[in-house]
Length: 403
Image (tube, helix red, strand yellow):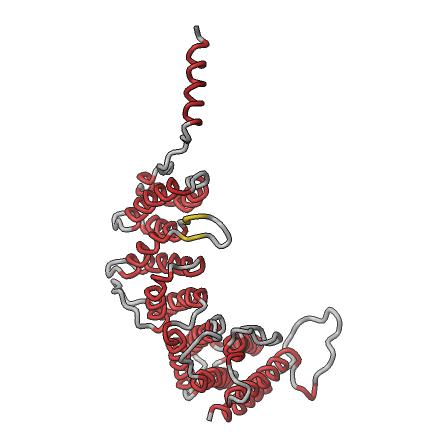
């Protein structure tokens, strides 16, 4: 008789299989209620990863959609609960951005999650850390691919963030460095979309940002006491944001673009390295009597070279959609220009000057260049005075093309 329960159990299993049933149930296996307990806050990042890997592993089709909807509801509830530990709320909104309708390379992001992310980002009472978590999710959706019906909405949100026009209301104004962090992240999203935007509005917005930062750098370069900690920090932030905006322009498809003002774009590409060279040239000096608060010459040279190289390489990418040594991309801004367009000659001169300046950074003054010995330690082959001269020459030459 003990055999009978197992016998009938076997037939019950067969019946389920033959009827097309499954043992899996479209129910979250994660206990989300425990996430709200403050004592579990440190464990939440690991729980997020386990949930994403385990809960959805065996689900496809309708079952997966049902599970995604339930999981999204649970995560949104945690993220929007102001009584929950901030780190847990942040991890919950990050998890929302990682939900996938189907895995792959790239995966298909869960469309309904985008609505939650946009709502969190735009809510007036969302803390800054929640807005940033939502922004990361929105950028991930841009990387994975967004429904064309929602693309303009996302473009508008990201572009307003980059240009500094986005204001969903925050409890306290963001520090300039934090605001730039948002703007740099939004640029990742715009780059992923690969489009110049409706009527070229993304290009217009990014050119405005670059011009604004170039103006800030030009204002700094006119100061007598330029090499202070605050001025240095401001110049670095301006260079970083403007340079990344310039590079982002190189990620777009210009073959199908319309309403692109080639002269304006060329003017902007020329103005930025000119401004960077001028402000960094002014900073390439150790103030007399202030050695204790000034960086050592070698360190200052390294920082200036880094800033200028970051700028010039980003501008080249923006123009050619490729590195300095590569051919222009077939969809690049440069390739979209006609051979007789005046912008081509101006950009070629800029490219020549950037190559010369880059060679100086690597090899030093032309009249004193030597072949480096094998395994010789890496060091700059110029001093601050020679660096100033090289930056001045580059700025002056490309300035003639900006007139």
